[in-house]
Length: 193
Length: 226
Image 1: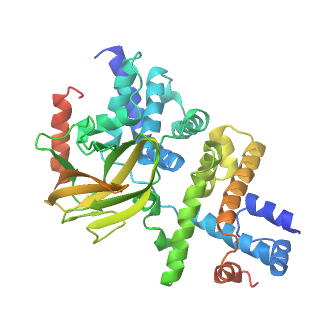
Image 2 (image 1 turned 90 degrees about the vertical axis):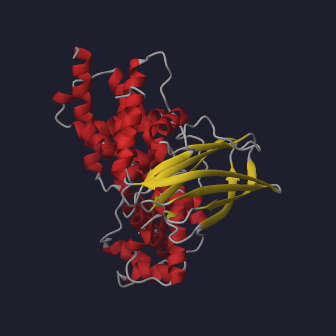
Image 3 (image 1 turned 180 degrees about the vertical axis):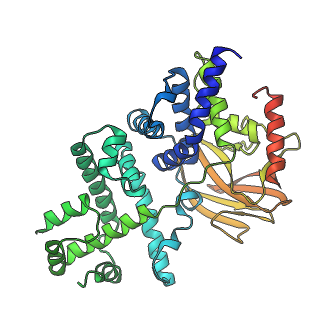
């Protein structure tokens, strides 16, 4: 085995345990399975070509999240994929399970419609805004944690999160000029309003 | 607390345990209650998105293709459909058709029998490429699924139909197919546009996952990829 082979074997042994995590994150960034594969592959090609001492990294997983995020935000461009609504499978399936109680068919239809709108709005945001919403609002990482992962100042992340949420909410408000009264009532009744 | 501050709060804070001033404002302002309701639902929807499923063979595929791409510096990195073609070569599950009334496999490799193999009882994405020379509106799509198979999210439906649009250039339709072991039949995709129909058929055979892995390993060995 040559030195190159040794390095390749070592590299693959180090990154392989993280590939599933990278794919899932890439999928959430791009919203598309093929784009997710492409994004992770592009990252791997770059790492192959610019070998770093990954073994010496104390937080390799965190570093991989950062470089994947940076690649997506800074250099990734949308592919031409038609959003085939209900046939774009992953984000749409199994969401009803998270609705509290037993919804009526009408409530189910409304909830499903809102979910589609949320996902459509999310994937219309810029890469930068979507990536932050994915990391913070979807994956539940805190802003202090993200300052560490992404090496960005807390203030930058806060203002970016503000703009991302505002754009998402504005897009949804335009589609939902008036929330249904019963939904509003459900939402605020927990606070005794 | 006024409406502007309430909206800033919505865009910066998690909507749990709001302070008293927020609650007081909400009790007096109907439009902010609506905004609050929508924001709360959005946050819960985002937080409850299911974990994406990692496709079969992804790790091997991405490492092999990345290694080969990095070894050939002067070659373009295999991306997009180059990768899809490679996936086709590896797994034989991608098919392609060309819109513009010339339905034919688009360079995709299929098994000699013409069939594509999918692992049983596992959702497998069958990709169909549609190349449109111009944007097309009001395109009808109909997918007929063989007995023993179904599209994920459409249990018990042998036919799924909808209408939509095609953008200029490449469009990719992902059909997430789940099949019982031993199920076999014709997966039929029909496009209806401007009074014309275009139908593409492909044979699909579902086999046990381990059998498929064996076939993939042999294919990889034959192609000297491993």
